[in-house]
Every structure is written in C-alpha cells, then in structure tokens.
Length: 474
Image (tube, rainbow, N blue to C red; front, top):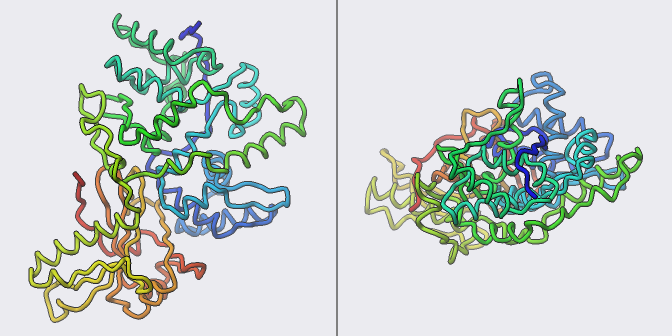
C-alpha cells in the first residue's frame, strides 16, 4: 500500500541549468567526435584540452576540476556520449553519432529520459549501494508521465513540488510498490482537503531538498515532453503524444539494466557494473526512430491558467518535412519579405535551390541594400537545428558546430563576401536565425575552425554578424 510519508532522497548526478545543458550538448559532441576513437590513457588530456579551447579559454583559464566534471559527470554519465571499449579505446556513443547526424536536441534528451532509471551506473558507488539496500527499482519518466495524464483527467495539475513529494521522493514509488493510480488517489484526496505537501528535511535548504527533483524535470523539458508554467505546474506537451504514449507503455516495466545481477560486495563486479552501464546507456533506444521532433511540436504555446492542455491538441499529423527543408523554407520566406520590403521588383530573384544537387547553397537571393550592389547575387546555405531553449550570444557556454559538404566549402571560397550561412534554431518561443557571412575569410582570420572531414565549421558568438528579427510560427 502506498504510504506517501515514507520519503527517501533518491538523487541523480548534479547537472546544469536547462539553457546550459542545451548549450553544452553541441560542444561535447564536437569534442567527442573530434578525438574519438581515443586511447584510454590519452582521453582525459585530449578532452580537457579540446573542451577548454572551444570554450574560448586555455587550460589555465578553467580549472581541472571543472573540465573533469564536464567530461566525466555530464558528457559521460548524464549524457552517455562515449564509452570505454574492451580494446582500451574510448568511442563516441551511438547517441552522439545520431545527434551529430540529425541535429535534433530534444530527440537526444528523449532518448536519455527513456533509458534513465534507478538504480543506475551514473551515481557514485556509495549512492548505488544505498539505492540497492532500499530495493529501489524504478523508471521515473514513464511513471511521471502516466501521473500527469491522470492529473489532466481529474483537472488537478501537479506542481514541481507535488511530483517531488508524491513520486520522486516517495520510497514506495521508488521501490516499484505503488501504481500511478494509487499515487494520484492520494494526491486528489489531499487537494480536495486543501492539503499541500512538500519535501521537508530539517535544517536543509531547498537546494538540498529539491535540486534533484528540478533537474530530473529539466530533462523532460529538454526532451520537449512537458512544460513548466509560471505557476510551477507541470503540463504535458500533447504535440508529442506518440512519444508520451511510448513512455507510458513502459510504466511498471522493470528497469532494463539489472543492477541487482551484480554482487556489489565484490570490487571486480562493482567496477564491471559501471563499465556495462556506460555501454548500455550510450546506445540509442530501440524506439529512437519515433523520438524525432517536429517543428510544430516544438514551437508550442504554454497552456494558460485553467487549461489542462494546449487547445490545439495534437497537430503532429502531416509534419513529415525534413528539418533541412523546414529551415530552407523559413529562410526563403524571410528573404522574400526582406527583398520585397526593399524593392518588390526584385522578389523573383529569390530562388529556392536546395533540391538542386551540387550547387553548394540552398537559396539564391540579392543583397537588397542601398548602394550600387543592391542587385548583386547573394548565396545562402541554410543549416537548421532544434533545441528547447534559444541560444544566447552573450553566454560563454554556447558553441555550435555544423557540417558542410565539399561543394558548400568550394562555394564559400568562390563567392566569399556574397556567401552566407544562415544557422536556424527552431526553439520553443519561435525561430532564431544567426547569419555568418564570408565563412572562408573567417576561417583565415581564426574566427571559425573548419576541419576537413566533411568540412565541419565550429563557431562561437564572435563569428555572428546578425540575428534576424525573431518570428513566432502560428
């Protein structure tokens, strides 16, 4: 029987804020893709040096402890972006390779949420042992989503505090001894009686009692599966209903990685459980193909007070356009508006060419600015990505990377001042577009790094020439 007063602080590794995690993901992927495969005895030095460099600092400007935390705690344990193989080399994880290929950050976090569990190999051995001593066995995200669905059906939204108290800090739930229905019956009873329950630990601040709760919900937000509104209510994003249903199907299913099959009293097996977990967690889920994020599901209005879910309902149907096409269409329409505002006669000079192979650019436009060059041709290559938070040029944790083809690099060399890359970010509150002009010169000036794999372009805020006016998509 569910006893909500039986509380237990079941922690995860400390992460960062939502925006920092969104910012750091491309940076980690960039470093790991660059240095792996990497011998075990070289991995620490190569990762730390490369990460410090792309953060715009030398290793003397960032402490070793901070670099180690990025490498082992966040990129390694929380994100599962690399693993150590039996051959003594570190390899980029399947999850990392998928992200580099699709640039879909919410899909990356969906995969993390789908595989996350208690107990796990993320935490230190003392924490792992403490969890097993309590017989904890729990997949938190399917359980939370099921409870949120019930909360909608009874018109009693759950807050961050409520999820912490009734679910993530409740020992009966963590042991797998309580169902979502039992939890929500207790929650409904308390609400009707006007009782508000919160996690309380004597002489401890909220950073101790709630940090692990907030951070677990951060990952669901970054996965684009929930919203947290100004009232701290946690609401489902029903434009992701297919993913939500896939998660709920796992509610009550035992964790896929069985920590209890290892003898944690044995030092060798303790070491092995962490190695095996790293390899397991680094692989993408078997249903990862449904985690792709549609732009219509990402750019979403947060429900207002009194609404249980967005009025629009599930509108993911028909959103089958590839990410690159979505970005090209957005920039094409923007260019037409920009050119028309300058001179309507020039609008027909804005031509979409993304489906024409081998050109090295997606859109042909015109300068459309005062002066003798108004009708000069402008070549635009569009690179789109998706993330929940908008990048901030003033944030020193932000870095990004794009892949360009040989034809695109040749076009950049040929057209120089007349060649621009438009980096399109589809985020929750609209669309952000950064413009990088003359990438060939920027590479010569050291403002971007162009690595001849495909020709990968690594850039930070110093390379950005403009940010287009932000638009909301209806």
